[in-house]
Amino acid sequence: MSSNQNNPGSQNKRMRSVRWRLAAGQVWKKIGRSLGLDITILLVILITWLLALEYATTGKIDLFDNDHDFSVDEETYIEEGDSILGRIEATKYVLSENSTGKVILETYPFKHAFIFMVAFWSVFISQIVIHWCSFPVESGNIKKILEPLDEMVAKAEELAKYDFSEDKYHVIEDKLNSLEPDEETLISLGDEDLAGIERAMNSLIKRIRDNNRQQARFVNDASHELRTPIAVIQGYANMLARWGREDEKVLDESITAIQNESENMKHLVEQLLFLARGDAGRTAINKTRVDLNALMNEVYEESLMIDENHIYKFVPSLESIYVFADEGLIKQAVRILVDNASKYTKEKDEILLGVGVGDNNTAFLRVQDSGIGMKEADVEHMFERFYRADEARSFNGTGLGLSIAKWIVDKHEGHFEIVSREELGTRIGIYLPRA
Image (tube, rainbow, N blue to C red; front, side, top):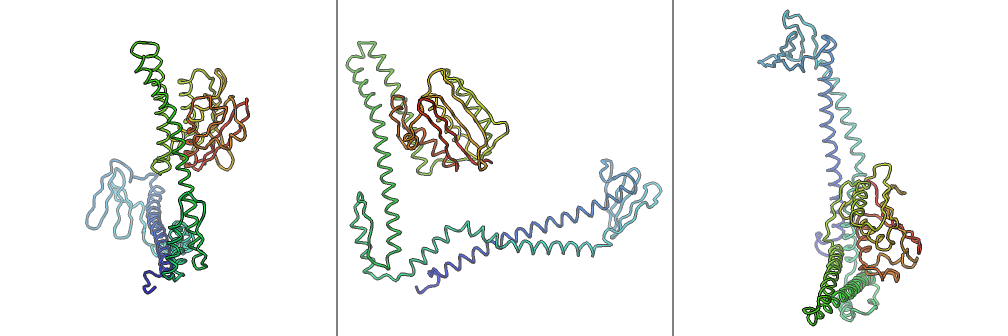
């Protein structure tokens, strides 16, 4: 390449120069903060020393007396009070009785200014040295932040090593044009010069195909799940058209069925939209400091109100436990677990909610039921979208709730722990990093 501006080597040098400038800027900020702090400390020491002398001599500090009147003339700063007069003339501080003029205290605050300044600059210069010694640490932090840009520069350098002829570009173009979307074959260019590009393109092709398969499966599953409620609504609508006007029993049955299926379809569409927004990165996550005991207690109180068919118990943690999380999303994930627990647990059986501390500085929210439980093979697939175990198909549900819960927990850098036994019940814990 003829221009240094397009030379990857010069780009890499510029990246290093940017890192050094940013790291130096951080060090200078630290030095500026240290200088401001040192000056503040010096002034505090001087004022405290004068006040201490005044207190040692008179037994009180009239500076803070609300009745004092302060006035300034050309040479003298006067402090008037009931009993004393304090003034600074030139560099001398004089404290005298107001009535008699007798001098009680006389000192020169700046007599030892040279010693103070030497000590001040000695400390400040030491701080400068210490801050510049931290330059490698700051440079490392900046490097970590700019690592994605460094990778781009490295890729540019790698590509710049190859001086491709027009024939090699035609080889790449022909191979890309020959690919079929549904084929599993990858590109094989058969050229050592193009080996790096071949690996990068095959990796990209794999990701694109995996994403396409996932989207196709998602659309097929969603279509299948929506087909049932639509068919039911259509069937009952036809019944209404034929006999609903004359048969009140058919009318009531049809209206109830249509209402139920419409509600199920609405719930399914909302879940589909949530996952679609999440996959597209359009779901906002607003993390704050959340008290897990308070959050789980809210879910517990809500469960008592809306579900009278089960016995709910809540075991809070003995200590306050906080995490940085989106409170609404975490509560949604816990509600999904509670809803599943109530769905698969017999009436009047117990559902236990708990909060506690896990290993590796984690905290957990736990939901335990005494329901039908799951097979080990089902546990492995329980978070897949639209997956429902054979035993669960007789219960109402979409198969999306746990997928949503997993998406939420993954976005909070957490994980699940599941223990389940058939006919004994299931215990699911959400583990999150503690604040």
